[in-house]
Length: 84
Image (cartoon, rainbow, N blue to C red; front, side, top):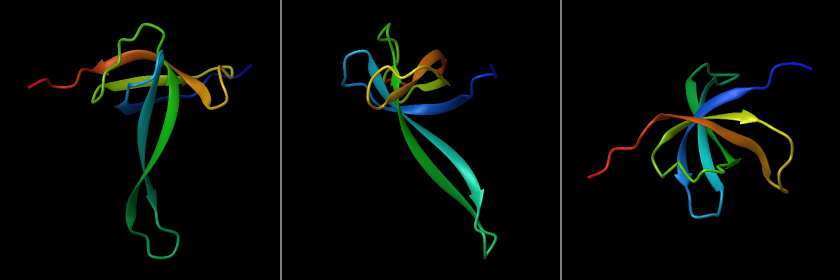
C-alpha cells in the first residue's frame, strides 16, 4: 500500500460536530496563456478532538471514508489563528 497524501490548508468552518472544512490552495499554470493562478479546493476533514478552529492552518491526510463527504482527517495543527 502506498503512502497517503498529506496537504496543508486553512480551516474555514468548524460548526459541525467532529468535522471541519479545510480550504487547500494550489497554484496552477494556465494552459494557453501561462499565467499562474490560485485554485482552491474545500475538503471535509474529521477532527475528533475538536482542536481546530476557524483560521488555523492544519495538515490533513487521506483516510478511509468516514461519511458521504469525509475522506480526510486532521493530523496536526501547523499554525494557530491569531485572536484579537
